[in-house]
Length: 252
Image (cartoon, rainbow, N blue to C red; front, side, top):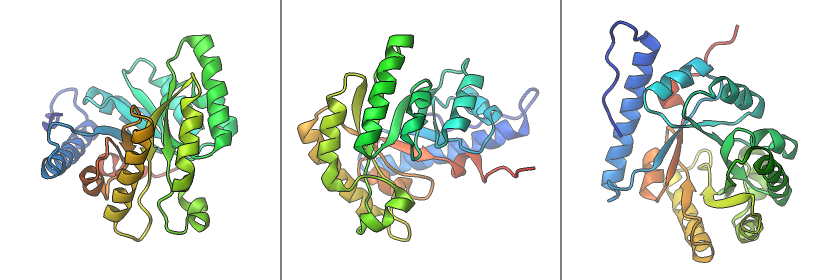
């Protein structure tokens, strides 16, 4: 994980320089947080969330060494993945997913970070099975999204995710499908509350999952504003958007 920003010069456009500098700052934050957590040798994977930003920016990021990108809208993600098929990128779907979009998502995504209900498991398993037969793709990595709100039933429309008590059942269902791979858990810290306690709770849920499914060690947690807390409590995948790409581009 290099900190060196791209040097400006012939052939280097200002946007590439800006992205390189932002990327270097985030990577330094990750390294510093990992060292503070006693895991300097176990850096989490960086997924750059590129929603609303053009494919040209993703191509720049790929040239800067980014290998994993995240999107949360299927129509946008599918178009970008097709346009950037020549780039060595791994695509992660990180948003709430409708079952009817499963067939499209499995055509480009290596992982879905928002599996939170049985109907979605069923839809993804069928779609991934058909895509494996058609294209030979590997099994789809699935992260169970956990709702960490104290009042999950009231918050579900805001953040999504399964209540913690449902995680074991979903895990069994995913692990029983040959076309799916149970990767681990994912969560978004509750709005308006310190993220540390929420990520500590997620770490405990992860430990319980790993006790039953030893391969499901991944923890997808941490965004621009709380990546340090996520790393402290074991995040293996960070989803960083605005601190690398900046604010959403103006429309029109």
